Image (tube, rainbow, N blue to C red):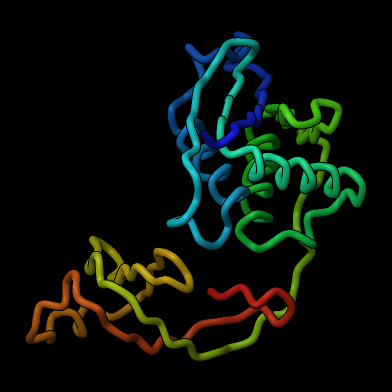
Length: 209
């Protein structure tokens, strides 16, 4: 049986004048932190990732994630390096974005996040309204991309998008024109297709937009 370890993200602060607890912690922040943790642990290939179990406990609000020990060991090393360098510029784009999301929430809601693992509880990362875990601005340039995958969704109320499930980039949304979708003669839903798209690419990290 695969060995398991834990990651804990403790959130402290207030909701109005009342100390934060699971009973007054809004569900939208739970949803965001679940997505952020997945992006931190598995920024690229999520299909092959191990199971991540979740629980929420008292003590302000304690998010408890249980997953493969090897994954938690890697995450503990990331926490240690962030603490040492006081920077997230070295992280993969999705991982860095997830840390930035926690930083933005800390500033907006005046929350404090304390992150640790069961591998080494002495290694802790604190994200507070006074920390500044943001990436430095990096140069972007116009580029052309080719995506191959399964068309899972197309349309949208205000903006038209094509949602493509790819092996290389995961699940991506590509903006398009409504007329293009209206003029399609064949139903491409759930079929394997190739797309050419224009966008931007970060010249240092390779991140695409």
